[in-house]
Length: 121
Image (cartoon, rainbow, N blue to C red):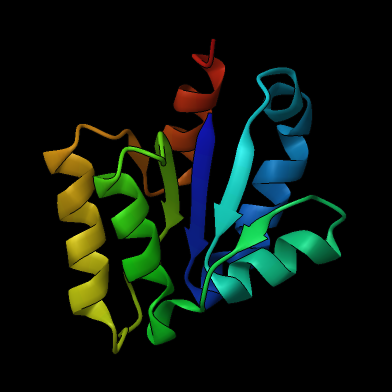
């Protein structure tokens, strides 16, 4: 099971906290985490294993979108900051669109991510 995690700058700490609170569920379900580069660095500093892509603005969102289209990524947690501007918005929209096209569960906030994690098998 491959989980992609992405978080805008204002949400990175929230993502790390969320993962740490749910570490047992992730480990018990053999979840492999991939992440955009900067988010992945935050997660590594917290002591979790993660495979890092490029940072989002440098193409990491597109790399994860490609993995979705290839059927490699099974779930995406993208904690977005709706109150800030993001120069790579087209990449973000492409990623969100591909989650819909390929029917990949997508959580954009901790409440939805909790529901998805609680239903891992």
